[in-house]
Amino acid sequence: METLRNIVSHYNGNVPEKDIQYAYQFCEEIRLNKGELLNNEGEIVDKLYFMHKGCIVFYAEIDGEEKPIEFFTENDIFTDFYSYIKEVPSRGYMRAVERCVVVGIKKSDFEHVLQQSHPLENFGRKFLEDRHLNVLIELQNNAVLSNEERYLRLIRKRPYLLQRVPQYLIASYLGLTPVGLSKIRKRLSEK
Image (cartoon, one colour):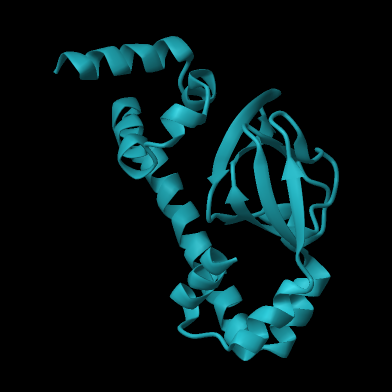
């Protein structure tokens, strides 16, 4: 949990130890084997998660096709934010790509903790602002970058995904076919 403490501190400086310990009592450890679901499509996702170990892919149905929307790995704080915030059924699901250890806190418990701790409340606000900005940047990049540029950006920012996630999922995540991704990789290796 030291890593989670460091992430909270990154957003909000030093959070009193008593506040951290208070929050931990509401957390639950979830262990998933490869292929297991963290949530099902159609469920309301009422937990915020911290990835302690492993990799999870978040799938959503887009134009009748199941597509990977995001990958979550160590030290990521994640959920299906739309379902979580709006309290509506999820339009996707999260599946373990490898064995995972995830820490979850129910939304009602997290809101209670935030009401009890001003430093943790600041963390929650700053984290959501940062998350929102990152999503906007990704949307802008996907709109203006070429297929090759998107692949190079993924290699630069998250190279570990290439060893942990099957190529067909990486291709789909980038909006490519597996053949299209192979062509890009071949072209780049020839440069």
